[in-house]
Length: 250
Ligand code: NDP
Ligand code: 8X3
Image 1 (cartoon, rainbow, N blue to C red):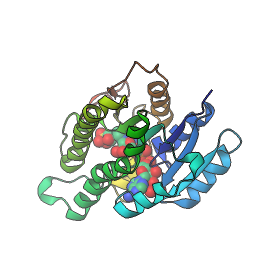
Image 2: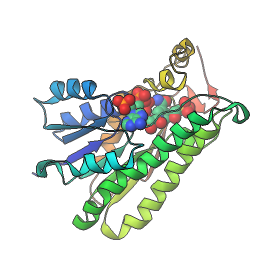
Image 3: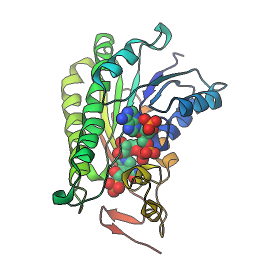
């Protein structure tokens, strides 16, 4: 059996980290990415008796650093079968008129251009091998806009458009492309969004939010379907959530 190789961005926390642990259980070789090398080292140590792990520390906003990091992969890790474009965050929650332009830059650069830069560095080899699977982590925020979500929602709508474009352009090469779009998942997402403000702690209170492991299991399900099955677009909410603004609290 050929061992698959997966590259996961944003593997230092939340959904990306749980996906690394889930893939390791299934013997998928891992390339784990993020800016916090110490966290990558710790995860590598935890997983190395289950699967082979290689770590790459770079900022997905940096086009050259992204390309250089992926070019630096040793031969044993260079043929990536599965790409999980997961790195991303919201920065701020403000009306459009009060929005901070640095927050807008961060979200556009990480959530949109980061997905493009990482994919650009990996797709040519997938095309040459006529094989591969790309999963972009979108969001329910990519399907509807909620108050003060403006730019974050725009980035996730863009992720869905990019996913559809990739699926069309990579279709002749037999490469699968799809998006997994979660609702509220309890991760460091709100800590980052609110920049350490304690109001982040209240986001997941009063209802049972999705856990990163829930999404990791879904991502493994998506990558483990037979070749002829491509899950193109998947929306998952916690049961308590009906849409971006309707959450049944205890
Ligand atoms: P976390 O904050 O827990 O994780 C975010 C990850 O992205 C971290 O590993 C972080 O690594 C990485 N990252 C952030 N900025 C950069 C950067 N500039 N360069 C490289 N890596 C970066 O959040 P989640 O796990 O919740 O988020 C993962 C994805 O899921 C995001 O795309 C998010 O939009 C999406 N999502 C989240 C939902 C939620 O409710 N939590 C719901 C729907 C979608 P490091 O800081 O080490 O670089
Ligand atoms: C994250 C979910 O509702 O906080 O994409 O935007 S939400």
